[in-house]
Length: 155
Image (cartoon, rainbow, N blue to C red; front, side, top):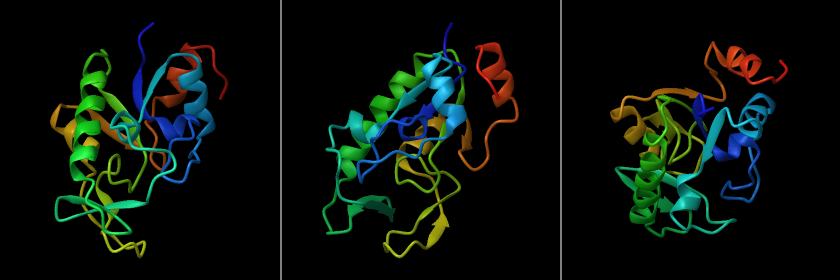
């Protein structure tokens, strides 16, 4: 059975965040474990290490806290993740909020002060343009539990 959605790999419990941790959401971990969700991390697909410096998006560029410009690596990873997502029949993605790759609607402003600004991460913007419906771990799809029920998962 093909996946019902694409999810940020960190939300599936995969320790791929910049600090080597995950942002596991139990329902999404179960969906990934049953094959109902395809976990992807554009930053890992770009070949960035785990752990890696914290990065934020500002004025179209991805910069680390130390000032390194990682825009091309992030862009490459976003393109790879989009290509993998487009191979699936689903057009729903559940993404990590505020991330420079996965955040949508609001992302960190590039000052590394936890301030938010309007905008989309690089992968989220590509997914949106490709017609994906975007959700975050803070606003899960209303049919999430239907997906889980159909895969034998528990609520």
